[in-house]
Image 1: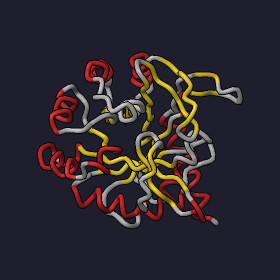
Image 2: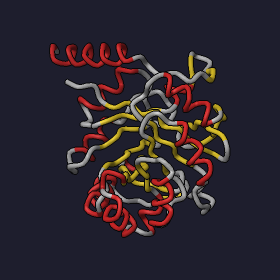
Image 3: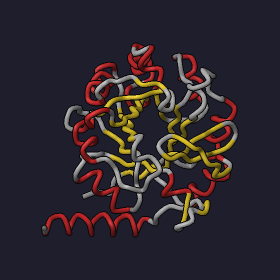
Length: 262
């Protein structure tokens, strides 16, 4: 089996990067440009930069900061946060970003997904779906950084996003975010089995083996992680890191062999 894509998910707040736990209590972890330079050296597959304040504040994307980050990227970059129009999407893509990520705006302006896909191609449009468990363990969507409850079934939300033209889904587990408990494979399987486009698992990665579990048990096409790549050790010291290619491949095949023998 080929190694899956492993994507650092970087949370932008103002001029700096932060990391959250269950989308709350952001902790500063560094400068975005310097962080990207380190990931360049580690030859990561791609990165996703998510402005977690833009939609909450109903602010436009920080185009200058996006362009500055993109200019330092030697890998494909996706950006999300504060996007509300095709004009903004065009400007972001022209700055060197390969994909835009739409989230909160999808609930208010679903046709933006279709308009963007028609103009720029579905391969450039990703829809991010933030999910938590509500009463009786029912999965439901939230938006605006988990401050607005949308209440949609994530399967329905994903199917609608694909119908509108999204080429990829970023599926975030709010409950697992920053916990190191592993991805929510049940949630992943529900969504991946219902749509035909790739799904990126996000929220909960605590070790490299979790990547494989997301693919093997959840059907994910790629994985994203935050805390695992910016913290180190039991005291969670800030240290930008990324597993080597050999570690990723060894762990991936090791877990696959173990699963095949049980």
